[in-house]
Length: 168
Image 1: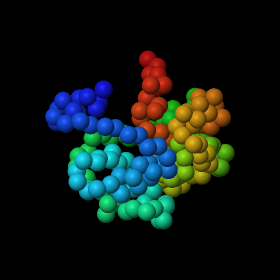
Image 2: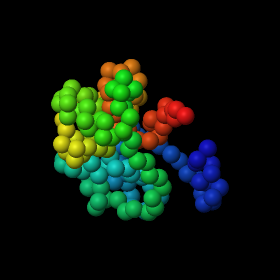
Image 3: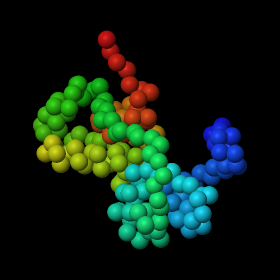
């Protein structure tokens, strides 16, 4: 277990408390209110930066109330497409979206998430209009993509990589 490994490595007790909710804003708020003694750590994500822009009434400021220590992970967003579209590359998706404006649906793990913003950036850069379908998490978005209810999804690699199949 991670806490045991950290305890052995640093010679002191570690305790992990997961606080889901609000795109990690609930956890960030609790940590921001904790004593600034170096004993309370927070694993921040891009969601925290996005929350600061989209939710201006947060009780904390991510840039002011937190100090970066180390980059622990990086997870790119993947663009995945349902096979029923017949699309095999980005150019094909752009062409299909231009031919059917507003009729290609892309799922994301929620409004304001990095997958949502990836989709909007893709729309803007490609000059297309795919329709955003926000879900309350990645699991529901993947389910609808696999079922063909949405045609496209922007998702962290860790969410969709296990389903990727390379045809020889």
